[in-house]
Image 1 (tube, rainbow, N blue to C red):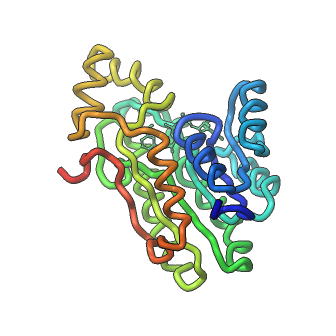
Image 2 (cartoon, rainbow, N blue to C red; image 1 turned 30 degrees about the vertical axis):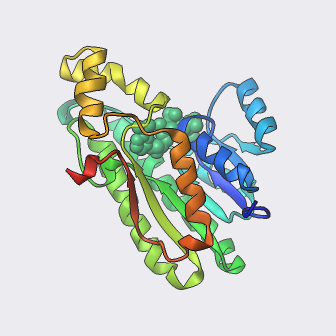
Length: 251
Ligand code: NAD
């Protein structure tokens, strides 16, 4: 259990990819701090399963990010995963959705990094892992806020990799294509509306059409990649954007 003695904060870890990463890091011995929303009983069950703590904070607010990081204490592994999506044409894009997506998907990562790095520097070791997206490298129509935030996250990560290069702290993005999680399921109705499609058409003609493998990425695969990035073998992997997208961005 090579991560024994290391503390990991995974934002948005009550569901989907974040939860899979929390499970994978825990399986290697990391002490896990959960974040994210959800039913109180379900969160209590996750805490028990993972021997974890949970900080209840809205990360679309700077005060929420600060509460998470204060509650978490000294963080060795920071995984910025919390994110949200909204699908609408630019002229109809709700400005409050733009603000919230930029706040949660990008600004929260700036703030967690800002607050986590001092301890990592003192400890002489750290891992920053951003769950970006194929949309950090390419675009799709009707996702202006999400694509902008994810491209920004990729830029932030490259910058941190350079700033922290001699501090034994790596910073990398993992960029999935479509992963079958509640985030993906929830955008189907809006995409049906925006494109005038059926549910099946959205799944096959919008989502998987971009993934040459024609299959959804599994959350647990992303958990395994996060574990790998914590290994010594990954000491010189920094500033990268690792695609796990079934070949999407190879096209
Ligand atoms: P999800 O909706 O299943 O989980 C999102 C998590 O974030 C939940 O724990 C939720 O409670 C938390 N969260 C949402 N708003 C929050 C807020 N304001 N404050 C604190 N926590 C909040 O989503 P997912 O599919 O697991 O996505 C996780 C990340 O992976 C996101 O950043 C997403 O953009 C990225 N991603 C997902 C896919 C995909 O296909 N699912 C593809 C590429 C990238």
